[in-house]
Amino acid sequence: MTLKIKELPNSERPYEKLKMYGEKYLSNAELLSIIIKTGTKDETAISLAQKVLSLNEGEQGLKFLQDISIEELMKIKGIGEVKAIELKAVCEFAKRMSTPFNFANVTIIKPKDVLNLLKDELKYEKREILKVILLNTKNVVQKIVDISIGNASNIEVNVKYLFQDAIKMGLSKIILVHNHPSGDPTPSIKDYIFTKKVIDASKLLGIELIDHIVIGLDNYQSIFLNLRKNEESKE
Image 1 (cartoon, rainbow, N blue to C red):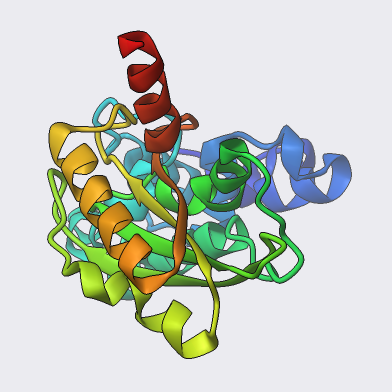
Image 2 (cartoon, helix red, strand yellow):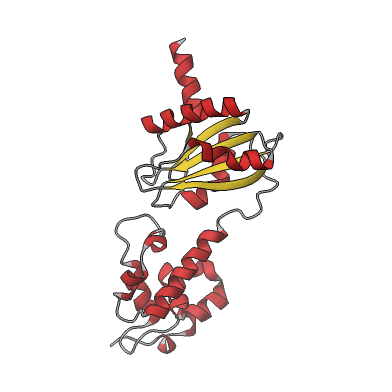
């Protein structure tokens, strides 16, 4: 017979344990049980949390929770619609917390600055997203715009849309950023072809394309640096 949480020693109850020792000392299941709040007559909140965590199909860490659906969560007996919605809300909140909110004073000096700015938002995305970072003359970020959202393999975008906001705001520098859901940031042939099209358009419009960064899982590649290396190797 499963012990109810209230039957456990205080030091083993998630609420009391967090209060006594701090959140870092709780397991993933214990933290999740606090969000789930209550169990059923046959299951504790902790055992329900363990069942939720068991839905992970080989992905590292807890990122699978961001992609799992409400319907999948509700397949677990004891996780109703309200609990499933609460879990999804917490996951989205955690994702937004990791996304820089005030980027007005962020200056882009090197490609890694772009990674630091957007990696937490893009590295777990299952869809390929293309963003444009708009900069002033001192390379300070003024705005970040989502241009296109595609599937896991490619995104289709009209080049003219990349420059709309820069033209409206009177800005003369942009950086392209997109993610590879596979986790491998190696640019594809399509990435290079698309970048060259944007370079040609930028010259006509007088808006400088500083770089095109591809973000994978905690790493990145700069298409501009790759193009430069290729040119140097030919010399």
